[in-house]
Length: 125
Length: 125
DNA sequence: TGACAATATGAATAAAATTGAATATACTAA
DNA sequence: TTAGTATATTCAATTTTATTCATATTGTCA
Image (cartoon, rainbow over all chains, first blue to last red; front, side):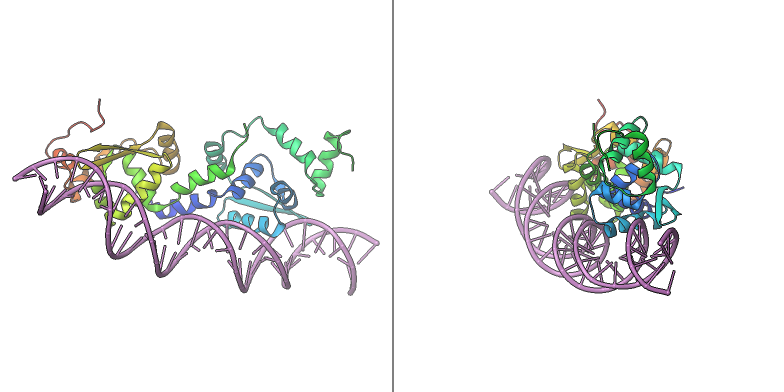
């Protein structure tokens, strides 16, 4: 039962990146599509897809296709606990996320639905 | 209370390294001197000092000088918890450590003393 | 089918981390 | 003081990682 430091370090390495951390901080709350994450991060779409690809290949996140959109979520509960340790508990911050959803310009169906439900006055489209 | 992803990533980055992880896995159990860590890692002393320097400057470990020797330990309990999450609990593996101590060729006073009798740590107060 | 929209991949370059080697510093003892 | 031992620092070469951009793929709908 000895520790493989090499392997452990490689796993952590993927989390040691600001944009990837931010992606994980979002998708640990609920699955989000690429266009949504792109808007949130303020980066170009290919860049975001690359980070997602790294996380996906490492088994940290999973993707689920829905038509044109691809939604990403955490691959398992162990990673959620990991993120809780690193970023703090994710519970109780959903309102903050919802606010984000209103602010960003994301054309995905999920966002449109949520925007209709939650925002009436401030941001008309 | 929003998260600084940049800062968080930089902290994690230091842990995402096999030799540094190994150093931390040793010193989280009890303080060890540089010559001891050098023997354990099987690397050159300047290399080990470099890694220690990085960890020290980031506030992850602390040093305490005792004559010629410099002993390193974790800087605070929060980091110990962090390492427990990453490497597993450190409890109950002291015998393994002691064994290591006999096997490696470390000339520091602490090692010499410990092979004779299990004495208290340098940091004991 | 063709056009379009969302996402993915690959290649080139820029930036940063890793490492080894030479050398410097600090402490002790004679 | 000088010699010897433990540790630290600096620098340059190499390797790895980050980032951008152009382009490819995939799914939808008229």
